[in-house]
Length: 88
Image 1: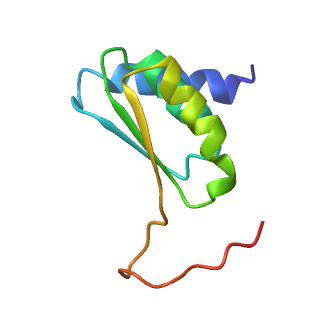
Image 2 (image 1 turned 120 degrees about the vertical axis):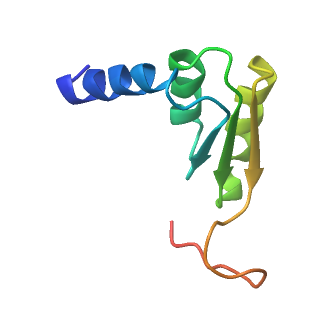
């Protein structure tokens, strides 16, 4: 692991006692950050949000392995409703 990744992981672990509660992961992709939060912040629930339904199978697999993880396929933005065109 690079020094930056280790520093970031240590930073999240130190924030655990300061900011209690659930973790909201926006832009979940395949759940990499969500899995890291579960490991670094034991006992916390993680809700990941991902706009691209392509990632649903992988996120479902993460949810099956960890009951503290859940996800929604949705876009997060400044307007309600409507449609979103994804450029992947």
